[in-house]
Image (tube, rainbow, N blue to C red):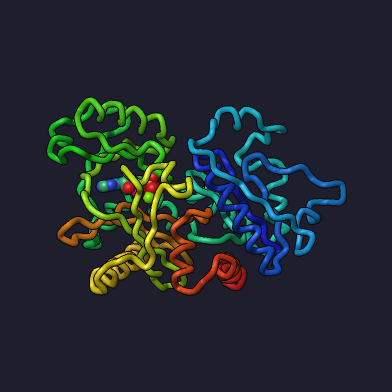
Length: 352
Ligand SMILES: Nc1ncnc2c1ncn2[C@@H]1O[C@H](COP(=O)(O)OP(=O)(O)O)[C@@H](O)[C@H]1O
Ligand SMILES: [Mg+2]
């Protein structure tokens, strides 16, 4: 199959996306596909012999590697450096490359990529793509919408408060949640803009950080009750829950650096858990996947307190596929290696 892997973009998770994109492209080439990797925002120059020659098959395909720096990129620099400026989100030749492919593998993370806009545009353009379609993306991208749907379905998620955009902090509500609490942008990812303040002073600093990371569609900032306990994720693929993975940061919590710098976090998969708790978490993850109308694959994040109460933090429509990412580790524990995982994802979309 001809697969265009779309990576990069103009979100703070651009570097994470490149890392995922390189790995996915290499894996698909190993599986015999004709592959091209393109930055959705910066685009690509057309070769003299035409765009179709960008798609390379083994042995002409050149493997690529991208190491994620320890801090998110300077987006303003990247956005202003774009030449030519197409005057729209999609970079030069991107849509034409998409039309040449049998399937576009979305290796994107962050706003355009996970919020449903690209999916909606591709539906109108008859371009096939991997992952969840736009209605599911819209529900999963906004952490408060997700929580409202979970609550309506009796699915567990921590109590929270919304600080409306431009509105004042209701200190009574924040004190009721207690410290530490968790501040997060509504449509963030990779822990960018997330903080865990222990008092009102740190709260105000954290609020500023979250506001700086706010998306233009965000209604406000989410403040969540801190769940003291262990952290787990459950991947779903093809209507099946993968083995539960536990995340154990060497110190502190699972921030941007811990997520992508090797050796700062230990992952245990399958997690060391009683079978009953494992099955309960997998069942909840599957119910969340259905309630949010997610597609062929997803990853649901959880915290579990010392009384074994399970809380869903969020659902991810395009789980990370980097060398340190959780979803591929869960698939491997279920006997699906990285290349087979990528191959299954594109094949599903191609025949759907
Ligand atoms: N309510 C909470 N209690 C404890 N830790 C939390 C809570 N919410 C988030 N965290 C920590 O912050 C990290 C990022 O939060 P998450 O909601 O998953 O946002 P992101 O989309 O940035 O991954 C989590 O992996 C977890 O370590
Ligand atoms: Mg998360």
